[in-house]
Image (cartoon, rainbow, N blue to C red; front, side, top):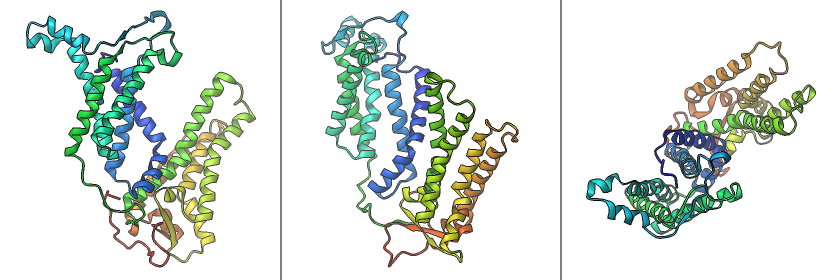
Length: 378
């Protein structure tokens, strides 16, 4: 693996890529977490982001930078255990020389690189030391094989040395990390994932984030990816009518999905993601309350985002007004989430609806009482 484990460029790239991946995959993460564990606390979200950044760091530190074809040099294979370490010990005249040895630092840094893997596997996934060590060995073997094969044929030969010592150091790091995690692992919760839980403002906030990502982030990422692809294969595809169709399809489809979700179920996609469902809490009938909830929440946010994207088509629109209106709606929704009793939120208050846990039976399901818990453990 790379000896430049402390390069700031790789660290910054790992943080950017990791957080981007965590954001893109946040909706699946929320859905899986609530169905597997019945809840998702703030620390669980932080752990998810840390795991994504760490995975990106592994890629950046072990495979990047990829060499250019002009300075490509084929590397060999080192299969003798502790070869460089033994040579360093023999050449050193004392502990000071040994501490300065690059071979010693190489082993130490490879151990440190896999400490977080063993720690996260133990803390987040409740795996034992044996499983964490085995996964560490497997991940290291995949990385070393990727380097040995020149990124699976991308290069004609290995651009980094396949070193058996790296496998051993990485595996040892995963083992040590899993053992250190023992001090941080709380006893497993006996609460069943199917048991109803309180509707907290944190839980409602996570659902609102999922709604916002559905109508804003998903079309934005899709738009960027399609435009990058078309720039290579069909540069003129988004000219004229093609651009109009592109904007309204990419930004309109998630909006239509959300509208259908609200009209059919009464709740939003985000409510479903965090295992919530709506109940009438006002005088508005369902046929009127559901459209009101859509138009005063994620529906309005998605529509404003669509209009902001459409400004590249209609240049006579006042630039930026839709984006400013969208941000105003976001702020108002966040204020409403904390200001309206019962964690109903602004759209719930205007539409005369409240939310309850989907796992509550019809016989005992009740509207959330004023002053619902607002802890971050749900």
